Image (spheres, rainbow over the protein chains, first blue to last red):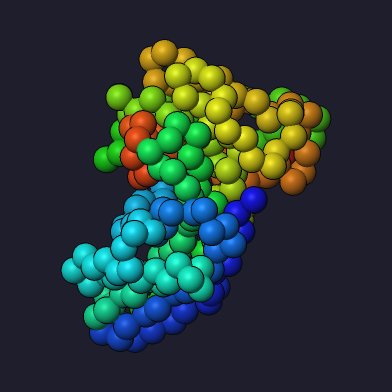
Length: 115
Length: 112
């Protein structure tokens, strides 16, 4: 089955700096890679996702890059703000259009943005 | 507001007991999946239901079972509870054909 590794497990940055979180996956058939943000005591929420036919996607201060050959993808947050502090999870899945699709999550990265 | 609600929010059980967790999915979301999130870990896929039938299962034993009902509600049942079953159990629904999971707030189970 799919295996997703995520690094680092914790990341501390100063407000305004950039943060990068990296993930690798094992199943070359995976074609959908979302990122979820989970604030303390809250539900995970999707912040950005990318399909395997795209190398990069950007949404304001957040961007995701995908390298299919190396089977790794990364989350980039620029101009970090204290409200970006949360646990971020990467995930990999195949065939989100299918009825039996599932996601395999990484172990998460605790991002702390210091004012 | 994602519209996915779970109950109870917290519960404590003893080893060997049985538990039922409930989820109410967002209207129109035909697919519901359940994830187990141990402390400090990512969500781990338990199983998924589509149109009231299980159509995908993760690496969990048969004592984890579920049901999905026509009114967008679902249940996760766990028999013969073990200490390692202590975790946050997340229900997630999605419209068929899309990848985004809409999670509930979770049910935190403690097994003593």
